[in-house]
Each structure stands twice: as structure tokens, then as C-alpha cells.
Length: 263
Image: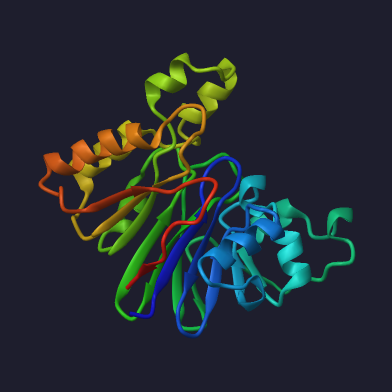
């Protein structure tokens, strides 16, 4: 059991996930301050200075807020698509005095970082070149998929056969409809390049879930338009309807790291 995953936090205020083996430690996104990342890593017995790489899904601030300080204070290489690197603009004044080790690739590439293989694939979101991930290590596969407006066939293909799945379940459609957001924001969130609803996740499970994942973590829950219990109720009912009540269902928190999942 040498693959370890902990979701350090997930939501509109910040996102970061640790994926580790006995040889390498990788952060998927660094959407918290360096201090917060360090505190959350310490809670699970890890140290930010041991991080080997940060792989970035897209350039939105809730995924890259801590990227500059991670580059400044650690030896971690920064991995992202070429288009995302241009959107972050490492030549800007914000990055003055910081010389990151930058590794760029095209969406769809398979990355080899230490003894981890990370498949990248395009997702529908309103960023320059957004991607999600399928991590492989010693026969174990984990899908890490958030920030997408719907689940296209290509995403369904990549999450098939995963033993562990982090999947966005951002909002309850009715809560979003009657909630406090301006109409334009509601349209963005519910649109094809926005965020997945609880209902969309439930429909995916009813029609396309291959039953491989034994643990399903719902991520990127809205603090305004969802509750963990609401998401778990709708998604849990969908799992039960296809005979998968034994799948372990959890929600990722915004303010604290998850347990360490071990495989």
C-alpha cells in the first residue's frame, strides 16, 4: 500500500490534493497560501519542503494562489500546460525574483513524475486550458476531476476503472436558482463550462458508473449553494439505485484536509 491521497481542501476558496508514494510527493494544484498548505500538510504528517512537484489544473486563483510561494520556498517543479503557463504569465511583476522550475506539456499528455504516472485530459470549464487527472501507481488508478460544467464522453472514458474518484458536486440546482448569486453568475455556474451539480453527478452514476471505484469523494462543494448532506443524499440515492450502496461516499471539506486514503 504505497499510494496515498489526501484532499487538503476543496471549494471556491482553495483547492489542493496531495498524491504521494514512497518515492515522490505531488500536489495537484496549490490554491491556498503557502502557510495554509504547510499547516494542512502538517496535519497529515507531511512537510511542504518535501513536495517534488505541483501539477496545475488551470489558472484560476482558487487553484494557484500558493503557487508563487511554493516555487520560492521549495524545490518543487511546476507542471502545467503551455497555454496555462502563458495565462499565469511568469514574466509578470508578481513573479519577479522567483525562478520556478517549469515543466510544460500539452493537454492529453501522460506525465511521469517519480514513480507516478499522471494522465491529463481536457475538461469543459471557463479557463484557458483546463485539465483533470488520472493517477496511476502499481496498478491502482485514481481520478481527480473537478471544475467542469458537464461530463463528456472523454471524461467518462478516463474515470473508468478508477479505484478512487474525486468528483465535483458543486451545487444543488434549486439552491443555486433561488440563492444570492447575481443572474450572470448563476448562468456561469450552471453552464456548460461552469460546475457540476449534484443532479449531474447522480445522473452519471445511474447511467455510466462502471462500479470500479470503491471510494467516491465529492469535491468543490459550494458554500452558498450546497450542503454536504444534500450532496450525499442525492448522490447516495443514485449509487443505491444501481446496487452500489457499498461504495464509500464522502465529501471533501474546504477548511480541513481529508483523511489519508491508502492503496
